[in-house]
Structures are given as C-alpha cells and as structure tokens.
Length: 161
Image: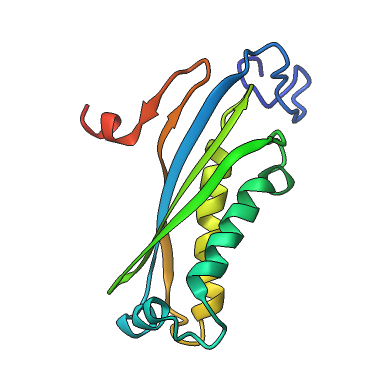
C-alpha cells in the first residue's frame, strides 16, 4: 500500500501530514455548467425566479462551500482561505460557474474550487427546479492551479500536448 498518500501502512485512511511542507501562495480555478431550458435561463438572467435572486444566492453558496470543503470531503485539510470568488455567466442554454480560490499554506485549494463550483450549480438547480426539472449539471473540472511542490498546472497546457 505504500505510495498511496491517503492510506497508512496498515491500509487505513489517513489525512496526509503536510507539516513539513513549505507554505506557499496557492490558487485554483475550477468551472462547471448547468444546462437548462431557454425559459429557465431567461428567468434567471432577468431575476424573475420565484425563489429570488438565483445568481446572488448561488454565489454565496459557492463561497460558503469553499470555506467548508474539509467538512464535506473527509481527508481534506481545513484551510484559511484568502480568496473565494464565484463568477456566473448566463447564456441561452444555462449558467457557467467559475470559482477562484486562494490560500497561503501547505496544501492546495483545488478541492475548494471544485466544491465551490459544484455547490453553486446545485443551488441554481434548487432555486430554478420549478421552471425546469430536467436541468443537467456537468463539465465540473479544474482549469488551473498555481503554487506548491508540484508547481503550476493548466488544463489548456494539457489540451495542447
């Protein structure tokens, strides 16, 4: 079982010890989409959803989720975030969410960015489901990350290989 960072010598789950790692500035950007009917997208864009301002609530939900990632993903470290922002772009086919999360610490914030996007999209579904129960969430992925021992990474760079 050696070589697996979240498994100890006996095969039990464990949180990785990052105590010896250097503290560096780290940032991660993730994205995802929720596809929906034109009617639902238009209502969201116009602020005409009965439950309220879908985009404002989804933005706050995503930020809150980033801050609570270690409560949701069992082996994630609780991190002091220095930034958590959610951009929401509405078009005729749905909403694209992009989260940017930063910290100065010993481990990265990829999971926080991915969690922020996921919860923002789930919140949009929850608030607009009366208009379209067939909405589909997908494409949740890491776009880039900076900092840490493994260095910078970009989905664009990987796509170009």
